[in-house]
Length: 395
Length: 117
Image 1 (cartoon, chains in turn yellow, purple):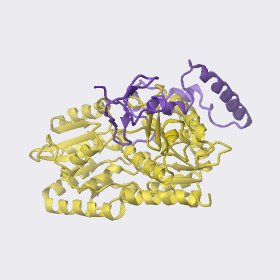
Image 2 (image 1 turned 30 degrees about the horizontal axis):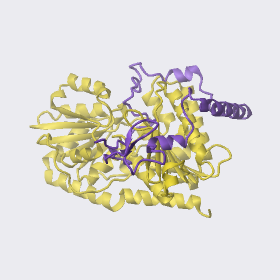
Image 3 (image 1 turned 180 degrees about the vertical axis):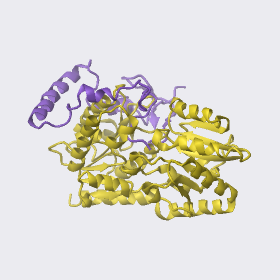
Image 4 (image 1 turned 120 degrees about the vertical axis):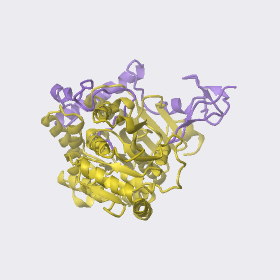
């Protein structure tokens, strides 16, 4: 629909991608959304991306045959907000109800309006995590009964979806546990793009470890700080935290850093754009992913983009030895896997890498090669395209 | 000279910046020849027209809302499904503002996904 009417009148899309997540943003999820939605829209000659807005993001945007609609109502209570979003999504899918062939969703509240009765489109439900598990960590006051209802909601939406896409085998297991048959579950791993070495950030310290990502308790920043305290004897070594969340989210971790006496050696960067994070990664000695061994990471699984992106940047990774991480990297080959929640073990692994720089550099190179061979976005997108193809065959 | 202020891009956003030829009759922003619609509408206002208004003060809102309310509640009575089954107690735990919940102090600059990487 490149004609004038398509560009200026109402558009009718064959594909929609719905995410209860701000887009674009500096979080890993935004990279993921950009890749998946781009693949969907490439397959279907454009489409509608319905996401969260706010800030100075425009409510609507048009780029050729693509349309972005952003939900920006300020509803503080999360469940109220999720339901308001659901209603908004329903209203935004309605004009396309007759033309829609695939609706790709990422969470139960996005899925609800998409799996409604009387639809002719197929629903692809991408499960990066299960709110019924994850929200017990983010909202410790949530009653088990409330989480149970969220679980029912997940089950309802999963049951009615035509395909379920998961980024790791661990999450696939969790989804299977909710009753989704094997044949409907498709593994589409996260990826990274291997690009040339970016320029060293102007304000980068001589030698530093890097942590990239959000700051929730399950990310294990506390473990990292305690490990870093044990590396106080390494001259000039600093820790750079590239947080994907606003500065005020760092308060608990900063308080801890002060209490254990490492705050002076930690540099903070907040919500940097993706390419700047890539530069910080590329020039670090070691990238650390200290995920904790909690239900969120173990039962539900996770698919830490930071591990993949660190390898793509050619940096050795020291990460927690969790099943979901083991799917991405091998101990001793691309970095070191250490027991979760053990600061001493983490510090020891980092120290050894720092003391054997040639070995470390070799691990970085192997990590990069590993990404190039098997974990590029191009490969993930090809797998996703195959899911779309299978679903819409015969149309 | 006025510049077109339409937001461009998908993952990396920018401003168009070409010289403007008109002002959008609805929001008043300057738009260039490329981005001006038939009535000089900017793409944002043109796209919004394709969807029903979300503003409850707009006369167009009532009709759609009423129809949906009847549709929605008839569905709810037929099959005790999901939309309204979180009670006040369930919802209470998801209020922002208490320091105990990590989700706590929700602000407009926060991202809002359920699952965070």
